[in-house]
Structures are given as C-alpha cells and as structure tokens.
Length: 456
Image (cartoon, rainbow, N blue to C red; front, side, top):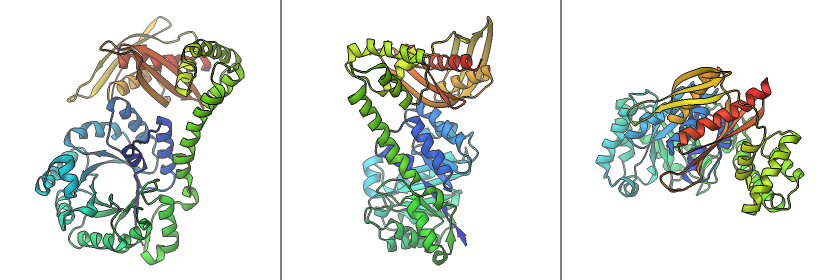
C-alpha cells in the first residue's frame, strides 16, 4: 500500500487567525501531535523573533517522531527560521506564497511571471540550508489555469520536495482536487500534498479523491475550516483498502485529543482566569483564595510563601482593584520563595545583528568564584539562556517566557517573567531592567537560584 504523509498546520492556522496561545499551550499541542502519528508539524512564519525563536527552538528539540517545518515567505526570513529549528532531529523549510491572481497582486503587487521568479529565488536560497524544502501554494483553487502546474514543474527541476494545493477559499469539490493532483502528477515527479477546506463540508471526501488521484500527503488542522487528523484517521480506517493507501495516524490516540487541548484547555484556562478575577481575587480575597489560585496556576508553595504572596497581593489590590493571572504570577515571582542567591549576575555581553549569529558571554559569581559561559543562539535571549546553562551544566525546561514594558518612552523599563520546570515543579523568576535582554537574564538567574536552593 502507498504511504500517505500527514502534516498538521494547527499552529500556523492559530497564528493566522490571531488566536493567542501561551508557550506551554504551543508546546503541549506539538507534543500531542508528535505522539499521534503525524509526519510533519508545521510552524508559522517567525514573528517577534526575540521571543518566538526560543519557543520554536524548544518545540523543535522536543519532537521525537515528527519532522518540524518552519514557514518563510521571503528571502530575509530564511536565516532566522533556519536558526530556530536546525538543532531538531528532523526538520525542513516551508516556503509559503499565494498563487491566485487576486492574492498575488493584493499582497505582493506581482503578476504570475514575477511571482514565479520570486518562488524560485526563495526556494533556491532555502536550499542553501537544506534539501528538505516544501512549497505551499496558497489560494491555489483560485489560480489561473495551468499556473500551479507551471510552478510544480519549476520546483521539480530545482529539487523542491513537495507542493501543497491549498483551497483557502473553500471552493474546490472533490473532483477539482482529483483533477488538480492528476495534472501535476502526470507531468512531474514532485510530491503533491493537498490542504482541503471544510467550508463546503467535503474536506474528507476531497482528501479521499486526491489520494486516489495520486496525492502523496494531506494537511490537517484542528480548526472548523480544515480537515482534522481524527477525521482523516476515520477515512483511513474505513477506506484504506479502497484507496490502497495507509498512514501513520494512531486512531486510538488522536480521537479528539488535539481538539481537547485547542478548545477545552484554552477555554478552561481563560475561564479559570475569569473565575479568579470575578469570584476570588478582589479586595475580599482570603489567604486560602490566594493559595488555591497559585495552585491553579501550577505552583506548589509553602504556607510561608503563600503568606508572603498574600501580603504582596493586598498591597497591589489596593491600587488595582482586581488581580488577574498575569499579575498574580508576577507577585509569585517577586514574593514567593525568596532565597539566598547562589548565583549572582556579574556582567553580560550580547552581540546580535541581521548578518551575524547571536552570541552571549555571561559571568556569574558563586561562592566568590566567577564562572563564565559563552554560547550562540537563535537571537540574543536564547544565546544568553544557553550561556547560563553552560555555566551551571544543566538544561532546565522553559515552561513559560514573558516580556513586557512596564514604563513608557525611550528609557522604558522592561520586565521579564521566566518559569522553569525542574523535577516536575515550577519555579518562577522575575527580572527588571531598561535592557530587555538584561531583564530576561536576571529573571532566569532568579528562577535558577530558587531551583538550586531547593535541590540543596
């Protein structure tokens, strides 16, 4: 039987739809997908590089089974995208560009000939990093007749692995996917993937017809407008023999599991924050309310630390009137488990630019001895974290990472909140500085000192 590749684009779709997810939620989604049998997990175009490069690197390094693809839509994005995933076990680059006349002209002000040149140029540049290059033809269902086939021929000649036919407009019938796949497969050797739309409620049927016509892969997402992996799994369960095809999806594991984390868990998180705000954390909150709230956020504090958090909470609530989860986490980071500092930050030097790899040199002091670490990374913050890990000789799981400005203007003060996980427990650290990188380093060291104190 023919092996069909299954790729999940949930994280890309969520970013396109501007649905915010925390670092932990993104990592949980990727981890669940990795265990469900999907072959590829696709990451969206890298935005807000300083923060998301760390997120992407962590996700990429956590995958044990699936390959990770990171998206690019211009030549300048290739280097940073490559740096964010190149340490993964299996990885590739996905070039994403529109191919319909309306989208090419609206987004890029290009006609088909110029877009073809742009696609070729980006793919060739990406091939300098890896041969595992995939092209996604956005809005392919509205492209001019023959244009997608023309793109496929060029991509096949330069060695791109696959082309994806996307029905973003939701106008393709199953027969249309069949014809589109057949047209490309009859004239090229390139792998053809399809990304059906559920707008007409025929995504599963479209995937079935595409596979029967010779498609090599199907792309899914846990979203109402897309074919989900559990729906695709059902198709293979019933029609695998008819299609003479099989995939790696484990139907016993995936049924609704990803849907749960995308919808229920996020809804529960938001509801938890709402409940805390509305029914607990106001001026009438008791120390037990605060203890329960901190436990809900994942912290296990001693009675003494709960008391410290409660005292700081009372001071803050008098000014704010209501406290949400982000504010409570900041209070925990600054008030709870304040321990003697094992490591002190002496100095740091960070170099970064658009034509160099970010490097960080950090010196910490421990028991009067100065310890230094030098490392590179996907941006200055990632490089700094790696330099600290080099000094302490241990890698801690980064559970959450937040950066925000707490004052305005050119001399704004930045605050960073870091959550590290060690031995199953969460340790938060807070850092404040006019330099965002410095704030992140101080936050990491603050959390690190809490871990070291408890371990000793």
